[in-house]
Length: 197
Image (tube, rainbow, N blue to C red; front, side):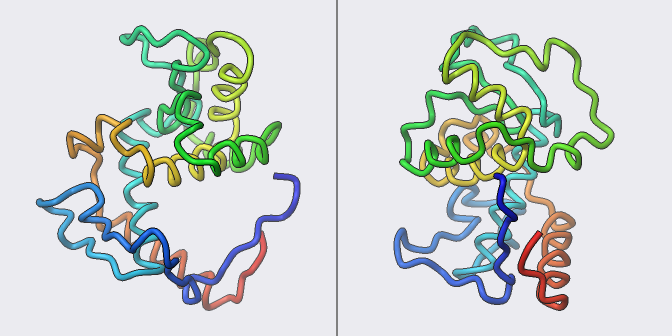
């Protein structure tokens, strides 16, 4: 995005009226160690979504924002070749109207790439995109713009969570250390009055 991102202080995040609030535990993991991740509407749900996204990114791409398609799968079409941190494909874009809006808003952006590429190396196979047209562009954006990949996956989790094997198989880890990290980010934002980045 070309404009500065606007942040809402964590303490002022309010629940939305629709869809109804869902706990991070109930959304994906009905039992097990995730029980400590019970969410109250508002900031807890949002923070726990990012904890879940962190675990999902570790399972889907080993945290490699630039990861290309799974070469053990036969998804080589522009619309079906998965890409990026969360291994999402273009054929998911119709699941919610905001997914296409995000795609359009982020076109040409590399937001947060400099941060995500620290300590990560990607070979030519990872950077390769498949097919042509919008699906190819989607793969490229998903790998080159981690901010897009994160926002897209966050929204898509709400609408098409069954897309991800680590979610279905309950192998995406919810780490208390990750929750603590995001709590400290919220505390920093709130205590410093940060509203823009």
